Image 1 (cartoon, rainbow, N blue to C red):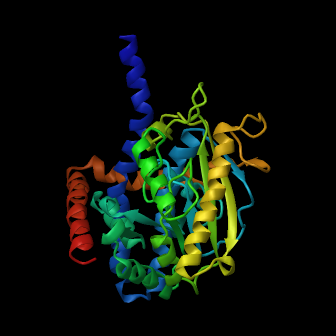
Image 2: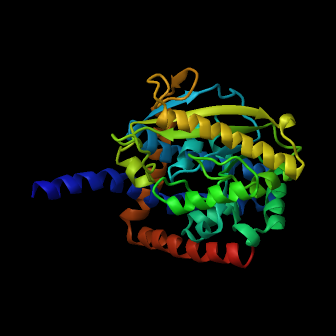
Image 3: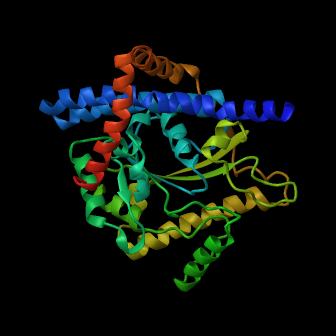
Length: 365
């Protein structure tokens, strides 16, 4: 009985925020759909401006749960610019929670609505979300030989031509680093050796294609690249071995007490555009990440382990930036659930949204 109660209480930590986030999605999509119809006669710039505001509202609600609700400490090393910029965000990739880290930085720069993702192709099948991320300016890509450069370039140029602000999130490793997946790490290291690149221990060998296409497609629109290195506290075992980073459910269950974020801004003028030199530049950035993470997980110096170099600043997120969004979206959702006609609209939005998403991504990409 006691064990059952403990398990039930633990699961509620995840199911409550997950229910709210998923439950408000139809109301959000209906609001966005109404604006999309109204904006057909307006300039694209006007549409993107309000679309970014709506997206900021939903993601602020998400951050209410991932930061305020969990109580996680966010520690930032380096100075985030106070002014919004058009940037590419490059980070190491360990878990599904990495997407939320990009939001955590963006909201501190008042750029949350401008976040757009380069996502692996399989995520386009997510009901409602997969379709909407594409509408918001995200790009879906396939790995290796199936990578469609033309489609990605066209998508990004369409965004920049209408003046849409850009905070493009890319994980160059292409898949998550998991210390328990030895074969994936070995394959990555073998690839680096074959290509004459430095072998990395705490990240996978970065792939340059998506980052290079984004850089070239938006070269006149970008101000900088944000080079971000993330480490989750609680992922070092008592025996000194690195453990997998927390998934989104584990993060919501408060299994990560602190997130360490090393931030480095690189001016766009300092980044080589020629493919060979860009590849070398990108790998060198990941060599730096690897050294940072090696010290974080393995250093014998008590001042270096579980921390990054420099002054780590605690950066709490004010409830005033997140709670209003949850109240507004909750207020839009409740009327749909309290009446029979509202519930039909609610369910219909999920069903038709999924169908429209499939058509949009697969028939009208």
